[in-house]
Image (cartoon, rainbow over all chains, first blue to last red; front, side, top):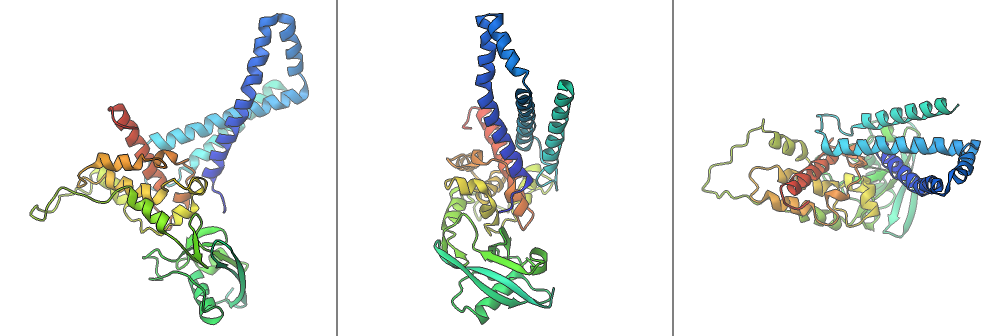
Length: 112
Length: 239
């Protein structure tokens, strides 16, 4: 079956949520290193400076933006009134994609 | 495209089966239902399929055409198969009975499970005065045109994932009953829509709205039910 934009938005929301759930334990693990002293945290931060890790960070920031944008889409669909003749509210999907792209570009520029 | 031949593949069998291949003459103003009928009349007298009105009123001829659920009577071949290749299957999410006919019991049972119209008026009462400008009535008017063709049900991925999900048509029906001022127990209708597999199972993909041949928005109806359930919970009822 051909999938519509709403399906892709829902998939983006789900998969980015899973990616964030997988990332958060690692994030807390790294922050927890500070409890063991500055040296332990410093060694972790060195890993964070590696290019591949930076790329992964970029992916995570984009995943967070996707999750936020398409989560807000669901809230808008379910709680805001439906204007007539705006059947699918697809503009919300495209708005979410545009916001995600902006966040991704902003992160890439700030890191570069 | 009127000249030439269409390459048509049609599902033969029940849940187990295979595609039959047919060469059908291409014609001007040819609908997919015309193609299926021509195959049955000329090549496969045993081909099973449903239709009745042929003009988009009855909703009985819906099938899956090149992967998309549609009414076959209102689908012109040149619109969906410019290359002249058609694959026709029964609707998704229902048991296949034979060839293009599927068992609609599950779909209709779910539709009935959200409740029937039960008013308080007797035949001695004057007809109810319904104000067309009333916002609740406008919600009903927007959703009441559903003719149970099951295209939305076949298009819904959530129905495919969760066979207990009531589906867009049943929940759209619940929304019309919930907003109908003449219905005696609207709370009971909302309860029905909140049963396991009810409105909160919807993932808001919008496939129902995208495919509805009548142009209805079951997604909006389901969103309305979700809002109503939240309000009901805030007022101390069920969510």
